[in-house]
Amino acid sequence: MLSFILTFRRMFRGIWRGLKEPEFQVLFSLAFLTILSGTLFYSRFEDMRWLDALYFSVITLTTIGYGDFVPTTDIGKVFTIGYVITGVGIMVGFITQVFNHLQQARVEEIKNKRKTPPSD
Image (tube, rainbow, N blue to C red; front, side, top):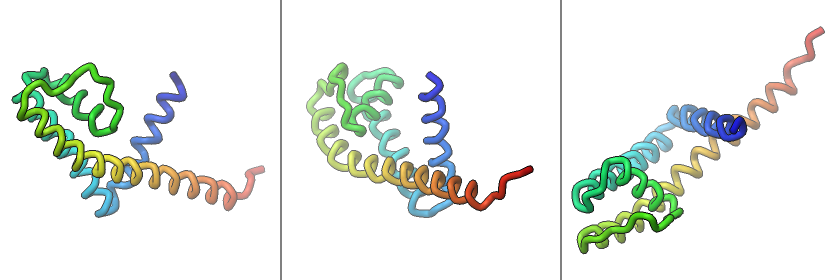
């Protein structure tokens, strides 16, 4: 459990660090809007509860796809095709940028530790 909390904390630090860069801000906004649009669509047209629609949107765009929810209407199936084609690329770009910022932070921490002389 502790490792999960630490990993989650590192991920948020990577996001926070990335929000200082315009390219990351665009990817963050696109990822947020994509998940939001899927959540709104699925809750409206597939009669899913908000939490189920959010869950389905995230699970779909991260390509996990447990199969516990599926679109049941024709419009839902057509939307999902376009949603996956556009959204997966956005999510891959966003997640890649988060981990790039995490890696940069680790490299800087290591450099700072090497530069700091030991205290007596």
